[in-house]
Length: 399
Image (cartoon, rainbow, N blue to C red):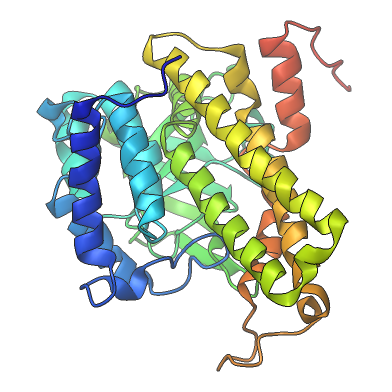
């Protein structure tokens, strides 16, 4: 594959870089949010980052790859890669609209009807509405088809009852796309509907889940008679499984290149600290730092190769290993961070005002513990690779 960029691509890069630098550099209007809101830091400056999301929307930087007829830029895959790389280099803050643009937006573009697109896409493109994802349940995490949340039809509405867990941004969101069982008599992969449910209504209770980092970006969400319109069922009643799998596929897009640059920023900080404290003088530590540097570049070339296949309408077997690759890498990087920190990893930040303020390296370590679990655990990812990519026999079912 050709990794070079054309003159048109470089012009697009210059446009993106100018926009980001003009707003995020020292003294710029959004300087305060630069570099904030990443893993383990999502609770910080939320209102300010929401305003940043709307600034992106005002200037057409949301929905890059969506068709122009739906308000997007119609950007090519390489242009998306360029933007996410420039965003990471500029210290763009963690996106409040990551679920909006990365999951529900593309789902509406590809599976929604005209009325649903007209109703919901403008708020996503403008950054004025926040969405959350109602997939996981206490007994339906990696085995999503085991979900028990029910939706019963009542006229032109669904009445929803059940529990969702690990729901990011639920305490901020106006909308949730909820996977519900709408026909319990059908096989478990059928009889499921993909329902768009307003969050600001009676019958919904949100309980924060406090994490190892001391923060609570995740929540439990309890539905007890909450209502949603039948017309807001993407794909129609009992056709939600295909839509849900499509949503998960959108999670593996061009933004992964920006994610990897975020990892590179973390490694740069770890390496700088190792040099400053003398930890880098240890040959074993130097070897680990070098291996991390190599790992980031391997991931980049792997992602570009996989994305180039997708751009030409195919699905590569290599793309199946992407989640396993980056999650395992980032978990190791978290361990490297606290090892470089040394004895200071055992104490809280003495310069902080709060009672439980972690150092960045500590936060990266604690957050990365979850990388190999959420979005499909490593064990499940290996099953997917074996069965779907390599064609191996399916894992025996335990009765």
